[in-house]
Image (cartoon, rainbow, N blue to C red):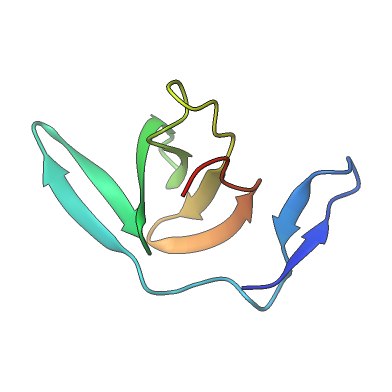
Length: 84
């Protein structure tokens, strides 16, 4: 993956380098998205198929990484993980 800086000064994945290998894992009544060694949960989805997934360490370690998806395609990944 290659990162660049957004117009707001935040690190984002460079277009054309979006990962396509991810896995949706059942967790209770919902799902967790696993991308590499990190997991993400969602609390936003609309009828048009757009969803936003946040790093599962968002609260405990203040990780600000988020993934925007449309249907089953990753649109972009914003931020850098603050943990391993």
